[in-house]
Image (cartoon, rainbow, N blue to C red; front, side, top):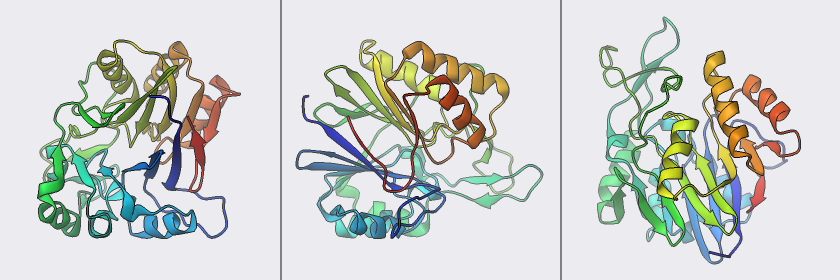
Length: 278
């Protein structure tokens, strides 16, 4: 694959451009030539507003990929399924499970896909591709499917449950990443990295026969990470020496500062409207 891929942040927790809007969520537009993919769909339909302002035609999407089944990554899915009525929809089957979460000692709340999102997936079932295993979206662009959990320091990153009573822990087994080949190595896009950024990289290295990491962009879910997890993640990234590290969404400011120190010339804090050509 030799065509340049352009990644545009359509939704993130922050924005620094007039006319665009932010919310707690993530959506990344991936374009190569005439082909385009949306990786996650934000918390609401505000993704559509940002796309219009940035001149991106979401009705022409070839694929929509969900990194996992949480509300802040799937909110625009219902409307997108109507507008991009030829786009294939890629998600792990466990993304459809009910999900609940709570802050420390707080009440549980639903954080799974909305009823409208689930209905949209059911209505578009002839275009849905379930991804328990790695799947090619198009030539050179793949989704990981289930990511094996092998690192002791990486947990799902919060109090997540599969039931409203909080009795069944949710390991967020549907968490997956998007990755693509460049002549110099692999670029990795993360939604929230609930499987762990290091676990994700290890899995992708197996899938790509150890190709080098060129860039990693997305949410690293280090907001409430232990010091051990943060340092282990930094060490793993430094060992792979990527040219670009872009932190978004759930990475957390402390982790962003440590990433800036570790990669002073190669780190960027992404926001709505940020664009990266790779």
